[in-house]
Length: 167
View 1 (cartoon, rainbow, N blue to C red):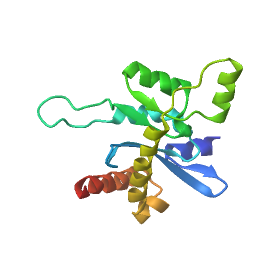
View 2 (cartoon, rainbow, N blue to C red):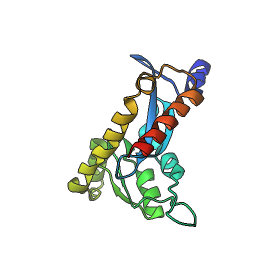
View 3 (tube, helix red, strand yellow):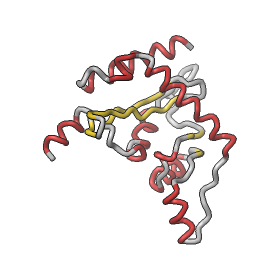
View 4 (tube, rainbow, N blue to C red):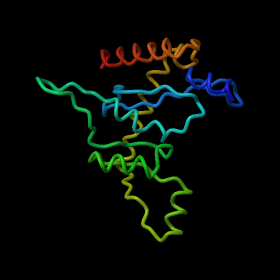
């Protein structure tokens, strides 16, 4: 257990394929990274969702505080949880997140309606996948040669900056 905690601190998790990492990422509508969190590959997505949303800081065009609240969050089923949906509601952020099968079954058992879900809005989620594709074009990010989390995080930050400069 102690050995596993050491891996988790380095944002590495053990799986059948070996050591893995996961990048939890938020991007804007043009596919530019806004914030990310690096965790062990075995970490659940919905546990990091609030952290990623909380890291978003977009400078306004003029003077004033940066924007910290997106209008809408479009995420995959991995981010579907009651707690995350409640967090988004409290902050006034619209959510387009499909529910997992087990959540739908639970709602049916309790005779509750499923969450509203707009498929036409969800189609825009491919922007996030394209952002990941652009990040993973960097071989060091795609394969994570560097096992030290600070250096790996720096590489992701550098690649994200270059994506912003490219668009």
